[in-house]
Length: 258
Ligand code: ADE
Image (cartoon, rainbow, N blue to C red; front, side):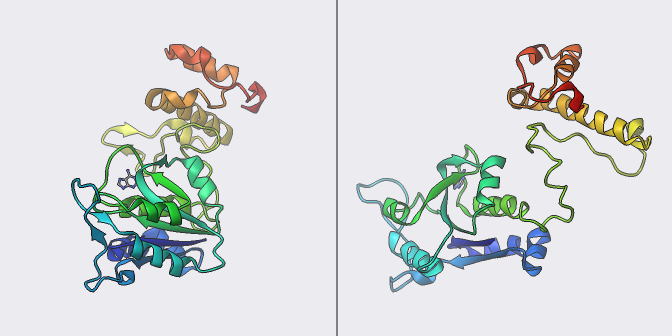
């Protein structure tokens, strides 16, 4: 997977791309990620990348020319990837979209700035607009890095163990992750749940599944509408006072799956 972030603040991206798991994945050659500065592509004498909006209005817009030339240079004639603009009007990023994007050969991600981007740059050079949530950032860099991070961790080998990306919140089962504990066994008077020390793998798996269901019911009940729950699991929620559990879950899991 190759990821290029087009930005007027490449140093802001480089730092994140070189740190932690992303940095290691780059060094190991598992992903090719880089930030490319748009400014040198400007044909203006002072390398400006912004201008006033036609029709008036607040602030400045990113001009189309440097973006177009950067895109042409970065993508080349046989580009087989996806060109994404990070902006608050885009489709909201979620784990399903992340999984879809992680199957692309190459992503080129454009970061907006100022009060927006000349629409023609988006019309001519962007395939998809993605938002990371219903709020406004000062620029697209943080959003581009969120997208890069979420996509990269799904590339085989990027996370240490291949199971880490499966057994987690928003995975196929549609449940939040169960709570986890490490040493010490007692912290500020609170003990680790005894089942986790029992060595009984079946009991541990069952406890974790129940905790995932409870955590989801408590924190994100909306997710339970599409989660796969057995009849017993719905009853488990009803017994604990989650009264809407009757209507929840697609009940695709049969009770034997437990
Ligand atoms: N740029 C500004 N706000 C943004 C958002 N919410 N998501 C993606 N890019 C943005």
